[in-house]
Length: 425
Ligand code: GDP
Ligand code: IMO
Ligand code: MG
View 1 (cartoon, rainbow, N blue to C red):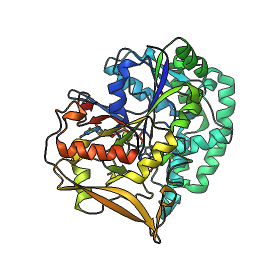
View 2: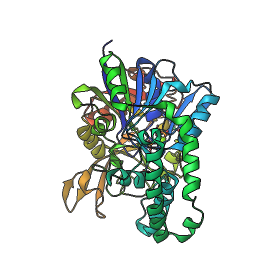
View 3: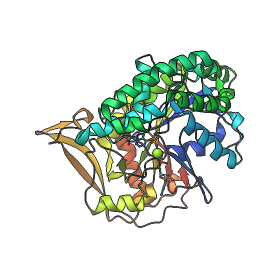
View 4: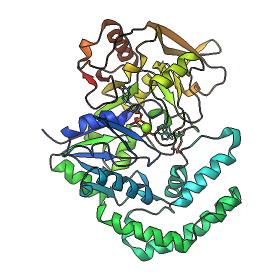
């Protein structure tokens, strides 16, 4: 097979099941690469009785074939990365297969402290961030004051940059939360821990552009793993209730240093319903017994923060929008098993505002009214279905309806969290 770059990303508000879909696909690839975000992501993989939660290491790590690459568009905590390395080593993973781009930015403890203090200061307008320092780290990147993994290889430069940033950040933090400053490490402590972490991380740092292009030019197959979801994109999501990176397919080019002409396939992952963690508009949200049932049956609690996820019906308006902004070639529906046992299932097919039909751009309007189309539910156990055409008639019709809504072919449907629980075409 010849070189390719295929992208798999979320087309809702994150947690669509990207980890499980990527794990399932990864043994057909030579490299699996993350392009954005950091440990705000939590990607779950279930293999037999074992459940793994990955934060920044790509979800191909439980196969022998692929190498794993953390691209230049990411922002990564050294401490978090090493904790993940330790977890993986315990499970027998050869860590030498993991590389990180010299262009990736480092998330320091001051970023996380600022993230939490800033979100608290927003009061009732809080975004409900994961508190991992993602936003403040991207702020530094854009302000051109960030510290990259490449800087870890130059101790003098690292020390100078860290000294400057530490004093600025402590002052910033003092303006938001004096108590947080008291608990904050001194510059000397921060430098010492950074240097200790760097010793283990430096051997994994590569020239990220050469890494990805040499793989491609060598005929290798590259699978690109999205984090978060389309509606959390900094430019095209439900701003300002978004993350601080580009989560859409275009972000993969930026985050890996590749061109759009190299991309063959963009697969969008969507749950058979919708969830969202944190604040922000969610037109199909259910505040009733249906919403509670989705949360319970789907075990909808955050991997990173353990927060209960808000739940609602599938949103066809948002899905169609996501198909456009990502240039989807196909889609995968996850968690179809979760909606077995509902007597009827809704799909939000239209938003109405002041007598007109409106799109995703109007999602934040307080008077927006979602229009729900109803589908007959089913009671079948879907967990053993392995081909989409073998689905019983009602769930098969529901999947066909989702396909019509998204406007691209559905290439797989997942019917359980375990690696094998996937129905394909
Ligand atoms: P990601 O961030 O997109 O990788 O998704 P998460 O791992 O945060 O959340 C998805 C959750 O749904 C995890 O707990 C998965 O184990 C689980 N899951 C994924 N696919 C299915 C499925 O088809 N059925 C069920 N019941 N659970 C699933
Ligand atoms: P995965 O990759 C779900 C949400 C947060 C918050 C907003 C901003 O597992 O799908 P941030 O810490 O990024 O500044 O928070 O984005 N968020 C996610 N929600 N899944 C994720 O990742 C998320 N990453 C960030 O809850 O609303
Ligand atoms: Mg997740």
